[in-house]
Image (cartoon, rainbow, N blue to C red):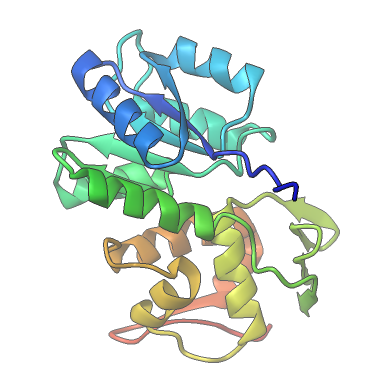
Length: 233
């Protein structure tokens, strides 16, 4: 009997501290992943140019003049890398730092020091939700059209580029127009396994989605102490 070969998910680890980098690489390898190490932004870009990873672990502070925030913004703006999930790694623990990391384009944020169990759990959770909802449906709301099968969004004929988390959020809101969704509901539906995810993450994701949608972003209504809903135009 011939068994199908399932490739291990490829994880690019961008970390300049050699001891931390080695520890992460070893733990990822034992966890069933294929880690690729890079100590700075230039090395990371070379690896990305060669083979696109399934996920990126990105340190905030890096040598060479480019921070993790800079790299996250750069990769989110590039069509080839904009859908690759990014987890920011940093010793910064203030809420403002977490928000800055998420607003730069990161999908998740882990504060150092972290346990191997937490790291693997977050990676698995993010990879599970990497793809948009596995429904080849097409949803429209006014001039806003979302095609889940092709993973594309158009507004008045113009394509809108969204990251995977923003795409899933918009898809869910468009399938439930006018319904009030609490942050807890959105965490459960969009992020799935959110044991490590803070509700503040929803606010940052909504902000990114509104910005990307431009004029249509005003349809996403904030309900004080309630959550969010997508108004019908």
